[in-house]
Length: 392
Figure (cartoon, rainbow, N blue to C red):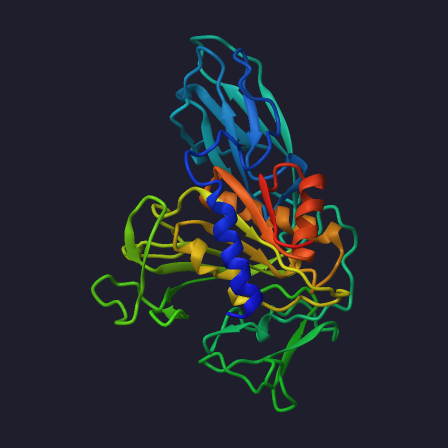
């Protein structure tokens, strides 16, 4: 870890410590739609604004009027019944991940069924869905745009690999045919050499989402862990103690992919009993989220580079914080704060849909990472609940 990343981790740990304690009554996402009205249904999108949904899904909460129990509620999107996606919560509301949304407007309808009991009026909310590749509000995406997913590596392995082929017109980065082991003739940056067989080009830089594990070694490095089998853990694995005082093997679930054309990362402490990283066991998550912003100055036109220190800050992960990061919220990639704010919203939306609403979200970062926190807190209320601007 370089000096800046080490300083970032220390500053986060110190700054966040002021927030440790009983969870404040703060939603990480602002209220979107009506709720708690007593005599009618309320609909609230927990993961984003209703007109800023991305990726085809949204986490939705439905509050019930007096006299209507959960068994009488029907939720539809268009003509599709999605009631089965909702689970009753301790407070009597229903929360569910609504997926398979079409691009553009989707009408979500909540109504009561059956002949007995009160008949509150039917409620509707329009969810406007945008592609996971963006944009939502930042305007036309610039071209050319240089993909860097093949460059991203950690501990000798690719984080993502080559981008998807999305055209045969020579626009963007060439994509090579891969052998059975995923190899192809490449230069030191992961780009195909003249010996490679080109199968197409990528202008959007999208990749498959990858899930896996790393562990914190006793020498302070994060190394890949192919199988977190509790009976066969590496001899050099470190342990960590969470905010709840539980001492566990230091194993981190690490998700990587592309959102809004940029590389993103989601990292969280994972129990060694977890069988599948795509079906996360969040029992070690302390219900707090940190958004790791980075600085520098860039002029755009490229996907950006990764930073293991910012994606995997051990002082935070070891205490149970969830950590999200994107190359699109790194001002060394670009300094377009419309695109950056849009990217931050989309990354957090993705986290909330997979893991639920955090008790609070803390931003951290210095220089351009600090400026982003000021601007995004102003422009996008609810994105972060606290800002740790290390230096601005």
